[in-house]
Length: 320
Image (spheres, rainbow, N blue to C red):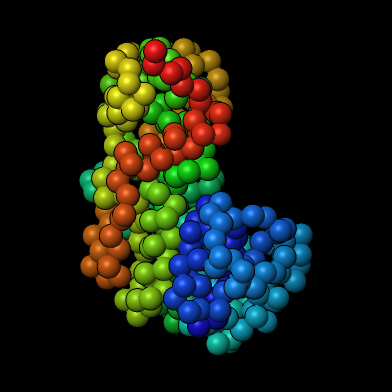
């Protein structure tokens, strides 16, 4: 098959493209520039490369449609206009499958756990709202016109080379340094809110299996997450153990914690992560397309933290 991957050199594409090439597909990697993938490999030498900017090129959608792909994997559609534009351009072509990368942020606060992939959603922020609008549009296009789409919603994407969500629910790498040094960290509330990390390789697996099991995947929505989620408290304790330190964890009511952090950007980031605090079901993905996460949440974050250490972003004092 001819497969076009839009946003091919990002974290998901870096793992997905080699899988597609190894399976004998003709792959065209679309990106704004000549970026390097996060994961190098000989497969990239057999990939067609196309430099296109979705924002700056008014002919972007037409140019994608003219590639005559059997499958289009769209990893970087962030608005309803983007999604409508590519769908309208692809209608009438030989396309057999369009895969849209959404996000668990399309969900709002969880009412029951685990959260089902096809549940009605009430997103909390503009990013989630825009993703959900695209999801609803694709569902309608599938029902009314048979447009062959699948929605995949990654969790907190993690792994080597990625800036991951820390035990406070934001991207402050300094939290890992505090833990490595054995200093105390503060968690909001009782630390019982959850995060649902996923290794980028498992997100790529989800896209790959949805392509391989097209008939079962059409019209469906899937969560691309690890098999289990993790509480902030469990995550923090695991990180102290990872660095060989005794846990030193304080708990603060939300207003006090926000004051303690004293950084509006970080506390807002934390809020939107922990307000939805879901455990996202992968049952329909297991049943319909055989999704089986290779990495657990803890293994995933440990790989990312080792990458921090290797890159000098977190320092570890050798034991004497």
